Length: 252
Image 1: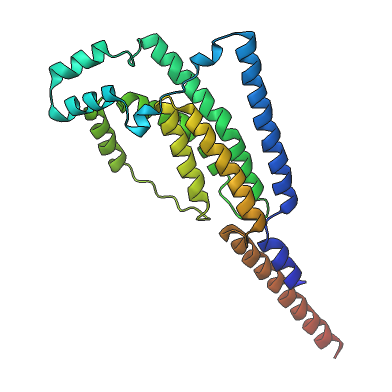
Image 2: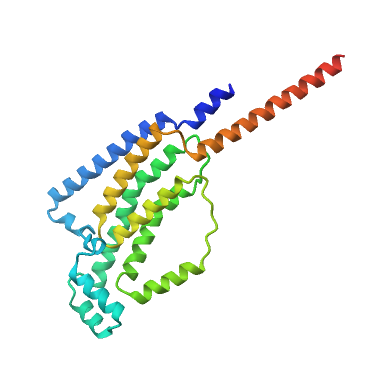
């Protein structure tokens, strides 16, 4: 019985993974259909989405290079001129609207990631708050990126603030770290208005995770859960033997 319990605990719940695969696939198909319908019904509506900002990531935008050189060189007059004349810099209202759409987009993209986290940990010991954290963290990161992307001083200030905050939290499974990295990556992509890159990242991550968990040997949390079950079974067996010995002694 112990061997059966060990093998069933170490292996991921294949039924839950297959169900997650079809659920996530249907979710993406419905999302894609909704975008197509929105574009057909209201032409140009997709232009409002924070996409196409991959130049800030790839570093191939001359305006961005010029602004970075001005910031690093301390040429405040040139920085002011570039900021005033740049077509990339929007008004306050449009920038706020872009950030709002980016935050909503991160939540929409991270929902399947949150479902994926719960699916692979059905049998294991895991941090129940991590899926909610991964769901909200990208929106926060997107806002921070938008604030500091045009200000070197703000970027250094943020680094100093983060360095002063101590996070004392140990993850129960090393695989959980990937969910945090994905959340940060999605937030950065959304913050620089490259939501399409965030979409590709989450789609690949979800289906790659399903494949790894289906054909892998199990996660660290599964081993921890298995050890806990084995300890409980040993205690039950020891308790039963003790009761049996006491019963035999009473009859003797």
